[in-house]
Image (cartoon, rainbow, N blue to C red; front, side, top):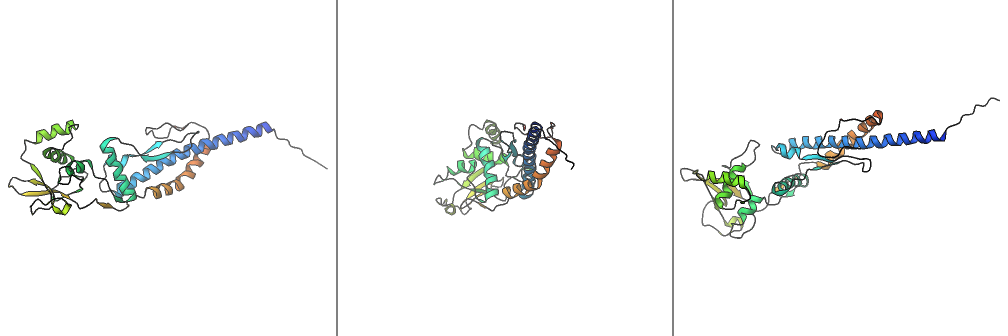
Length: 262
């Protein structure tokens, strides 16, 4: 009877297991980060197609805010935090598009609302003669001039205040009509409640109309569904590619203000 005997060096086996485990951990970390960038790109693309003329700031504010690491093998895609009034307004844009519902009053609406007979915040929508920027959004310069002429421009807005003061020499005049339609005391005017611009002929041109309540939005951005579909499609591929690469260093991860995967 012929017998073949084989032996396995346990130490070699343990080392092989360790190497496989290390490679799998590295692959999972890289796959998570690269998948996060795929999710980011998919969300940005959807914003471009579902939002009405979004600015680059709104599109690019969706970022990979955390790269995956060995100690924490998860990557995060989020809305980059922008502080101050602009930051709150940007976050409100995403929130209403993702979840629907109503939005909070904008800073300009709060300031103008303080002038109303009731002193409450208002909601405005652009009217026929409102000025727009290249993205189709209400012109911030005109809104600054309105706030300045109404005496509610924040003194901290130095640049905007200087520009508004220079514009005062122009013949453009804005005024507000409060009406019972907003729950305010009637002004006795037959004009609808809102902000008007008086032209050279003395005619009142509607610029912003006051709404009876906060605008309601339907859900347009499928944030969570898009992310889940992208993860299912991308994660396995990135994991296989990373396993094939082994522990060889790679510098193909974009930088976005987060620490590199380690």
